[in-house]
Length: 609
Image (cartoon, rainbow, N blue to C red; front, side, top):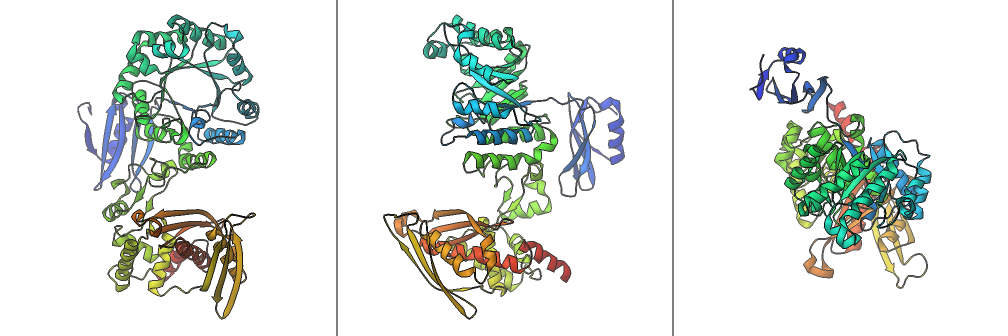
């Protein structure tokens, strides 16, 4: 069968097997097999010997296996989070932080991690001493430094010599490729800059080091003086550099320029070419991918794109784009599922809020809110998801809101009572109540635990564990000692009344402490619970200090995490509402005898059916 002029062909499963075994088509790559209305469709692209054949899995996603010719272009991923990431505003890594990040990057299967210069500060010196003790399986640690200073012998340069103390197999040397920088920053001649590059690279290659030459400002330099920019690269290669990395240091180059220039360099050098992009124009990821398509085989960037100014190329976006979507090999396949957890882990270490809007690894990457979208995803997830979120260790999120659609809200109702029909009066009442509450400022897409309590109250499946009689909060300023606030609370549990007081760092903390103190006598399991996050959002800022606020409280008992919400023009009252919901959700969860209410409800539903 001759397929050269056919772009898509409907085939039966036996015919696919015939094609897999047919040497005539080994020059074609099967992009994917799509299952539509009982038929198998094969699409392919020429110019490779990698063959992909399979059928759809039950979840609607492609369930593929490589059958023939494992010829795939390998991309070396080079992480610079420890150096470029540390230059981001508000980020400062301790030595312990750097060691943890190194281990995490190693678990992800990345090829290189750049760790700074041991001569620049005592912190980096200690890191290089301690990193040798780590049992790393995948990543190669790289020391980073500049070419020698002007008009000095390379062996006499203190920064060059300091790189030797790192005792790494590989070193990254950056040098100027833009004549403007040579004149205005180094204040030297173009020839002296070339000698600086040659001397430094040769110095390390003679010592048996793998040398990666970072051509700083290469794209700006090429556009200004292409002949000289290429000379800097040729010089580094002549001196023994194993890889030359083209740097868009200012982060302002457009993708078409990156592609054209990288392609030219790849065609005119005999060593692998890398790409290093900053994100000042918002195109670092696109620029990196186009450089790879132009022939670059090393990609430099940082986890989550953290870096100076607008950041660096985001490896958490680049890696899955190249490996899952474009069939390049960046990391071991088995490591891809750890991408989301490692991205979040490094955000925690960096003490920055993880960007939930990030592709692949953000909490919103596979979150669905619109009713029609949700309905389509339930029918077949590829309708609104470009990949299975589990491939990168993420998960699908269905957001509760007034626009989520009746079927989505009904699924949440069924977690409490599976007997409720979508056209029942109870379902209508819950949907109407949801719209009323969202109009008041409630937003349940991030606080489904509170929404479950709303459902229980309407269905008559809610019984309060306690009732508030009164609370008082006193704030004392200036602060004297550890606490500046106190709270007195009077609650009733059954026919018993408890009055207690507590101090805290602020009125909400004092109220939280007082409530726990009052309830622990009746419900000892409250001791397991703690607040992990507290957020306040002003809803109508034009009202100034009389504005309505929304409070979100995230809680955990060490096993589960849940979020609750409160809304009021009084921040203390809004906090109280969210706090009460959090406590009651915990008590309901434990009363049901299961660590997860949903599992308990689903078990009951199965028994009924």
